[in-house]
Length: 251
Ligand SMILES: NC(=O)c1ccc[n+]([C@@H]2O[C@H](COP(=O)([O-])OP(=O)(O)OC[C@H]3O[C@@H](n4cnc5c(N)ncnc54)[C@H](OP(=O)(O)O)[C@@H]3O)[C@@H](O)[C@H]2O)c1
Image (cartoon, rainbow, N blue to C red; front, side, top):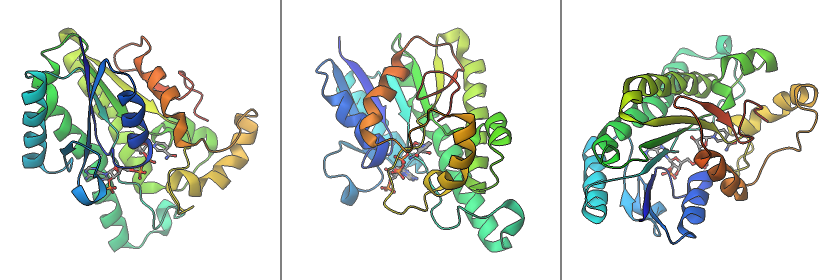
């Protein structure tokens, strides 16, 4: 029996690596989605995760191939704020603050909820019932405190909200047999611009990381995708929040 996957934001970065790795296994049926055809010539569904019409059409497309079901949803797509990652919360001008927070929450939280809700009927048809929300250690409150990390404000706030979103789903759908997992991939060098929040923050984080995580070897490459996928499919409890190490070691 084929295992079906729906991966958002699959035209580049970690999402693309997930699709490539999952597709190597013939027992998987992989739907990689992107929001624009221009950026996704090899993918098979279009889905801007904030466009409910596009999402419903993508879900119908999946259902027509699988017979109405889906095993695993990977909410990978995210808005990663590239312009002002260094700013601390008190350093933002008002216009950029509103713009950056709204966009980050719109994509990283609302988009994930819209996608999940549209696909729930398909997920309910299978026993796997697995949803993986790709999050970040930057959304983890204890880690932020420990790392003393003041930057990447909109992104961190949106990922913290995503973490709560995951828990709300885990609570609500527990009795139906769902597993909602938060997975933080670690720092992965997916951006050419070294100002991506994780990478830009890396230098400051790195100073702390050296003391917090003395074995940290620096940013990972996207080839790390297969390791992440193993962590995702390992037996875990509904509502878990795991790093690429399968625990709560974030770097
Ligand atoms: N890289 C890291 O170090 C790191 C660390 C921790 C967590 N993460 C998380 O890992 C995931 C993947 O990160 P990444 O570095 O691979 O990101 P990335 O290279 O920036 O790719 C982001 C993906 O999300 C898509 N996307 C953005 N807005 C969208 C929307 N409204 N609808 C549909 N797709 C949308 C992008 O599509 P377009 O090409 O059309 O923009 C792209 O495919 C994200 O959830 C990120 O927060 C990454």
